[in-house]
Image (cartoon, rainbow, N blue to C red; front, side, top):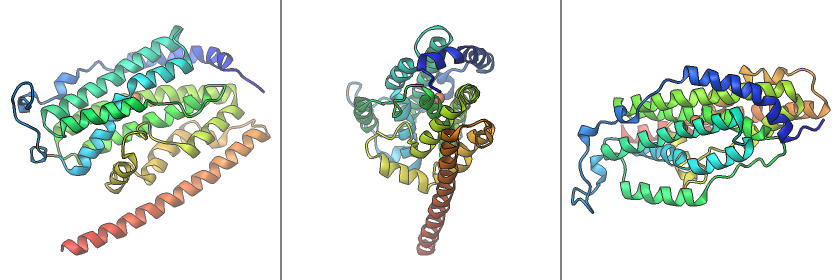
Length: 312
Ligand SMILES: [Fe+2]
Ligand SMILES: [Fe+2]
């Protein structure tokens, strides 16, 4: 069975409309400025002749800083995401309304996090700005140039949940209740985004189960965080994983499995041989991901035990 992108998007339009209305009714208006402790702010050096940034001004740990920078740079690349999503879904009707609304909400995240980081002098503002320029210079490309947009829908379902978990856990380890409160607010938005896309993916499974299964399998097997093109992302993501903010165990248990379980993906009925093959590949990959997650956690525990033995 072949289903063109146009066919699929047209079939999904009523689902988009229902979920857009649900989203608009559920999402609460909030204001970034209310979450930023402006009284902690002072002028920087340069044009205004204030004080230069120095690391000791930051109350955050090194890993909290790294994670906040990765999360902010991820949000910053929004023009590229908007371009990809608008190209994939189009800008007409409910699709267009959603794409624009989603972009505006993501923009709020970047505003709020940047204002917090600069006001509290949590990170080096010059390094942050240079990293933003480099990252946005790279842009973001949808890795799944298939002909049905299903890979895109599957990707954002997992990606929004991954972003939610990443913001939430970064807030928790920040040791700053103001940071935690801000990131919990941002994470609540990401959760609503995830629900929107997951509901679409669920509808796609009803429309075209074989193609949806193939898309989910491909996406889960090759998943990369949206910020993977950030400079030194490899080193940063290891640091983030070592701190338990986002690691393979979390990816498996709190991102991949919950989406699959919610949609009952593994129990999908009426698959053809192609769909069954995709499901088998998915099951096999999940088992391997689970094994890798356990191996990583064990290695980390050993390393941490060694470290604490050294310091005591
Ligand atoms: Fe966001
Ligand atoms: Fe989001």
